[in-house]
Image (cartoon, rainbow, N blue to C red; front, side, top):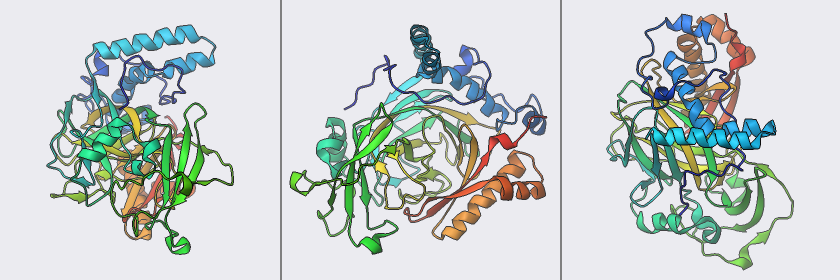
Length: 442
């Protein structure tokens, strides 16, 4: 089990902070006490004119509150290190970390048999942690592919979840949570900032699966194990083997006993840039009953967008009191489409900061990166998923950025990029990405 210690490893390569260049707020703003008062100071249209890179007044306050958290997790250190001011950077970072700890708003949620659920979403799933808006959560996510090489992908904590969480399905993913957020009500938006991620172990698994896009071409399932080099931010294929443990890979958490004789050497040396992210993240769904964890939906879930990593912010519509947020299906790298069926599936630890927005209602998940706002579409028909992502982008530009429909439609055609998020999750995904720099201050 990976232990959590507040004395962070300041020699890691931290991720860049959000590029909103304003001074962080006072200490009270860090715990979110300021986040419920937005919307009264100026009109939405006037606010957007003055602050074109923010989505709402409350989201701006949340980003400013997150500046201190990002600093505590290494961002200030990274910036000072580039200036050669290593000693000063370490002092600043430790001071920021002390400030956050003293505020009492940091929580630790480890992945254990009592905090994990497997293969489903259910709005009646009881929360394992309750936090306040603005609180920071250290959270662990486990891969459901640890059995592909248990000697490399399991430690005692992972093994405990595999051994003891036997209520699984109808889907495949292991989730940590849910987390209830005080004050979150249906109609609100949950804003989740991913402050930092780190691999739990040094290996991950990719499978060319029977649900992969080209399965009918290969007519077999094959597992490739990748070695993760955190310092270089690269992954290297270590070995591969054809899966023969079952007729098809259809049992969540199936464990393949290590067999050195079946593990084939990789012939072509390649290096894959790491893109650590959550394949699954979201809130309790609106629907009743146990829902398959594989198809994504308005509540989020298995979106499988590789951009949902450190430095990114996700927005989810809240359907239930407390929101009941969860994470799972952590990946170390993935390409758009996730063509073979999976990414580099690997357990991951992360720091998140979670806010509740009352002034930014949405109907579908929205992703914000340093450079883009991204809308999503999901459907069994890829063309309809594309249409939904376009409709969502049009709605975003008209209702959130206050553009006319005609002007928005033209800008989408000439300035917005569309992509295939994934084609392997039953309900396929497309996304639309609008660059922030298209919007000019007035």
